[in-house]
Length: 547
Ligand code: GLN
Image 1 (cartoon, rainbow, N blue to C red):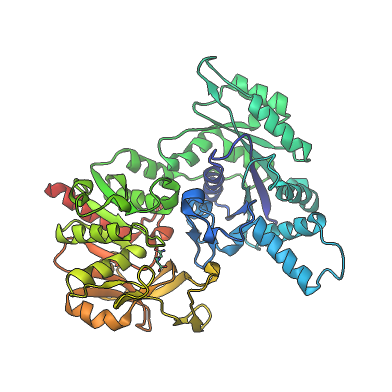
Image 2: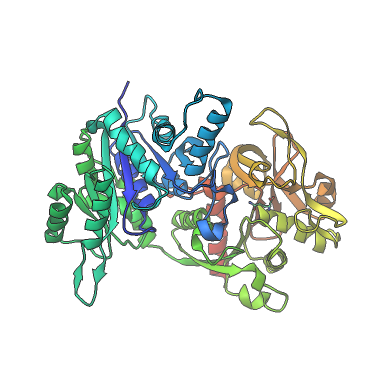
């Protein structure tokens, strides 16, 4: 059995320094050295999972194959490592407390007083060590938040204890901090880093490596100063510079020798990282042969992080087609019969993403109509598929009152509705879905199989009949209306294997019009762009050429 080594990544000074991306890049580098790597995010907030959190506050909710609703950093991890993660890769304070409190209610603690130390910290250690399977060489653990926050203290205490439990030689602490450049003084400033390391040391964690987030590389001299003040090796201070493309980060770290230092400190096998695929990716990203403009018409447009995986999947589709993809985010509430032509002009492709709630839905339906009638490549994802079905029912199949039960519970034609009883292959039984207030537990979540109809856009993309994609939604296309929609020309090109659930719809006589009930963006990878995004961008490229 191999002994898994652990890398703990903490952050200092302020949030949004790109800790997730740094963790993922380190993982990618270690993987490129031939090691098996897994990666975990520990989030200090009290929500049990981010499933019910507002995407405009917290960013996208990333969904894993096993149906966990997780932090968006798991998306970075999957994209950089090319692996599929699970619910074990993301814990929150809420989930840790939930589990401890459940044990307490069951009487597991035999009447003892339940405390942060040792009960909460033990639970955290269990979550971390649960990652270390027999074949894992390195487990990277990213602690969310910033050192000094009240919330993250139990996590920091747990990893401090783990160093003792597992042994120093199996643990490495990397601290990511900000080294701001003061233009007026003309120099980088190290004081915030010094303070944040001091804070970390005051709780008993001594960083082995300091990663300095900075606009331009930190000089040798400055690294020496940081090393001296923070008591780390001189060659253990690295720059994490702003990059033009996020996928350049592993290459930058490699240039700095970060993976080499990690390997030496953790006594990992000394194989050089093979980064040929990363080099090719960055070359392709920086040498596009054309450009397409895609409009994303959604609700959470004020925070780009809300559509993180979507954004990345479109970039991957661009790489596959050797074009750069410019994204225009449109608030669907702004799309009205008066504005639609104007707002959606000049787009080579239109995408309506997933979403919840009624606000802005009519604008999305209008957007679909515009794309359909003007023959602009259209991609509808989850709610986007539902809008496409509603639009087609209203304007082509003659069902004027067509709507979703989510937005108009009493409408005559609920072409999208709540299927209360459905077959859940995860549980191998009929499952129940309700509209009750416990929003956390009523969705179709995670990977489900789908049968693709031959002779369709979907089949042309996937090239196979049985696929698996990830879901996160409550409502389904109403089977009662399938004959009418089919008669009017809509093609149901993807169905659940039992034929009960509509997974994909498309239209003929259109350059590329496809809706899917699942979220393909979660499975797109820079090294393996998702086939639907690839083909959507191909269609947009053709559209662009026609202009
Ligand atoms: N609100 C829709 C549903 O619950 C779509 C969800 C989504 O787009 N993720 O079915």
